[in-house]
Every structure is written in structure tokens, then in C-alpha cells.
Amino acid sequence: MEPKDVFKVLANETRLQILQWLKHPTVYFPQDGVESCEHGVCVGLIKKKSGLAQSTISHYLAMLEEAGLVTAARHGQWTHYRRNEKTLEALSNFIRNDL
Image 1 (cartoon, rainbow, N blue to C red):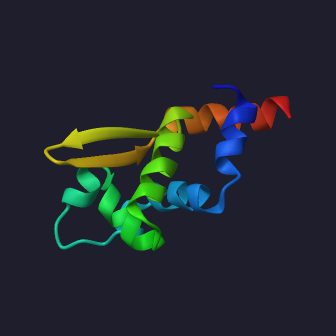
Image 2 (spheres, rainbow, N blue to C red; image 1 turned 90 degrees about the vertical axis):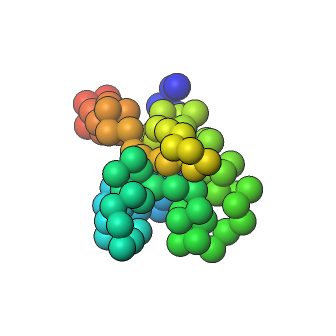
């Protein structure tokens, strides 16, 4: 995906906030167990924290995934998301070196 397209995805406050939350999942999604962070954070927890509809959060996560900013993994009936640090590092390098 082109950098300009990634910036469009990041232009939404909630999508940007999701990436910030996923940077420190144990801080933003504290749970009694580690299951929420071991494989990433499930959509339900992100929905609950955001206060938005499940369909909206699912759409935002799909956009972040399409941009390569997050990865998704199915675990049973749940989909867990985590940041794609490789893509974020490449974006950081682009900003640092090319802008």
C-alpha cells in the first residue's frame, strides 16, 4: 500500500487510537488472564473500549489490516488483532528519510 493510503487510514482518530491501544495491550486492556494479549486483542475488547458499534470497529480493523498496520489471527470463534511492527517501522523510516 502506498504511504498516502496509509496516511488516509491513520487520519481517523479512532483508528489511530486503536493502534495506540494495541501498542500497550496490557495497559489498555487489563484482564485477569493473559489470553487477551497473548495472541493480540479481540474485537470485543476493542469495541468495548471504543464505545462504538461492532460493525464500525470491524470496518476500522479491516482498514487497518488492509493497510498492513495490524495483523489478525483467528483463535476459535475470536479474531485477535495486534500491531504490525514491521509496517510501522517502514512507515517511520519513510517519514524520517523521505519527507
